[in-house]
Length: 165
Image (cartoon, rainbow, N blue to C red; front, side):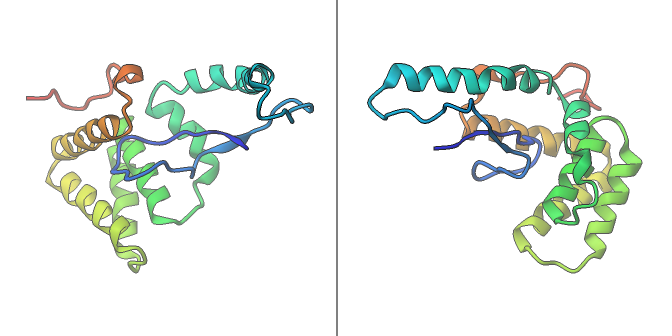
């Protein structure tokens, strides 16, 4: 069985776990254990994830997420570009977010579900930054509830462009 380190943006609608930005965690060379050797299996998992935990803790907000996914900037998949646009928006780079969303709206539609989300984000941004911020906040709150992340989730301070009403 493989262990995955998964990083998912919560700022767009998600129906299930997304491995787009995930990687398989490589364990120690001696990682094969018998299923009934629970203690040994737990130790192997602990050794495998120990060094990964701090890297995940360092992903505190949109700037760190953008840095993490920057290697994928040439990926034209609409949902990846949507992540770039929304992340740029969240760090205050509204013009780049608008540019990315507009370029996606000008491309042929391949995945209607992704295009609907991109369209909603684009229309919200055209209505004003407050509208897109509200939309993102709603998507994030829905995802936190859907994936039962309430106990571990915290909204990064200082990232809201507008105050909630």
